[in-house]
Amino acid sequence: MLSKNQLGFLYMFMSVCAFSIMDLIVKWSDSYPLGQVLFFRGFFGLVIYFFIIPKERLKTFYYTKRAGLHFLRCLFGLIALISIFIAIRNLPLATVVSISFAAPIFTTIFSIFFLSEKVGMYRWLAVIVGFIGIIIITEPGFSSLNLYFVYPIIFCLGLSYVAIAIRQLSTTEPVWLIALNFSAAITIVSFFTIPFGWIMPNIKDLILLSFIGIFGGVANLWLSQSYKFSEVSLVTPLKYLALVFAIIFGYFIWDEIPSIKTLAGAFLVIISSIIIFRREVALKKQVSIPRHE
Image 1 (tube, rainbow, N blue to C red):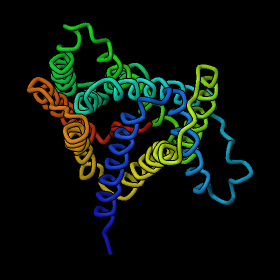
Image 2: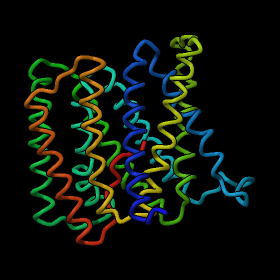
Image 3: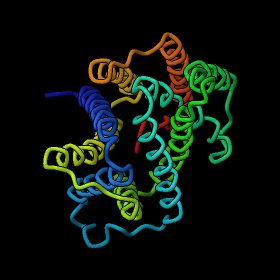
């Protein structure tokens, strides 16, 4: 029988694996329109969440007194999701994952304005170190005017506000409702892209595209379960395994070899987010959500 910490460790590991596989399939799916891929992410994620709605909420599952905040969470979540999908399709996986680790840096800054938090010297130092890491990773892209490097940064900005919104929503709203509303929003928005051309997938591609929603949906659930069962300080560092998976997948499938600059920048970004994380734990604040989209 596993202890609570061991269960939390297992759930976080499965969440990182699920997100990594989702990223892999998104990169593979570049022959399909982005809007169509969004549909599969949203619809099949939605199906999963309907199975976990409590019986007493089946008839009123949609009820909330915080519709405005749900809307903002979905809006910025969509911006983040679209941005990361575009980045994954057009940049090396390791590069995208490395920059995505910078989300806590922006969350720290946003928390000043949205949560009126006071940020001390250590976290400001971490923010500066993180920005240096981002500059090192993205410098080759900006020097060659590769605008796709902007999208992982937009993802971080969007996800940072999502982290703030989820902090606020989770005080009154169940996790499944927050996730369900987001999947519903993705599905609805994807329908507006049909006029721009969708491609009828064959059976194999249909299954793989469906896995984008399934893995994305369960990854968010496992992430939440990990924090429910375990000490956050134990499980959060596991998220950096995503970079290992990205390097392995990128190398063996697309012959992508991360540059020294990418690895050096990733190291600084990881150090930065660890400092922020440790300070949040020390100050007993709710820790930044590593990835929730």
